[in-house]
Image 1 (cartoon, rainbow, N blue to C red):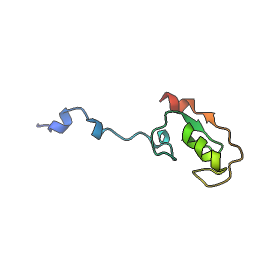
Image 2 (image 1 turned 180 degrees about the vertical axis):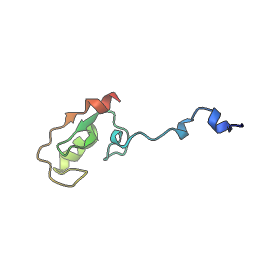
Image 3 (image 1 turned 90 degrees about the vertical axis):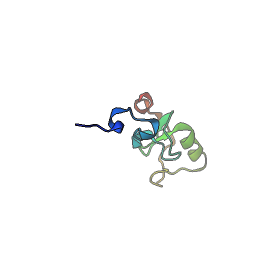
Length: 80
């Protein structure tokens, strides 16, 4: 049996899988380093949602009004 070279070498950076969608901020579309949970139940990068809430009172995901602007740290995502 013969094996291909691709099967024998470790994956390169370009071949690695994308991070799970839960790790990506829907505002910045980048991996979150300081994830927080907003009142809409979605996680965002803290700086991005703070900028959003400085001028809007709606959810970036649903467009519906946010009942509060409190942001809770998402320790689970931060640890991963």
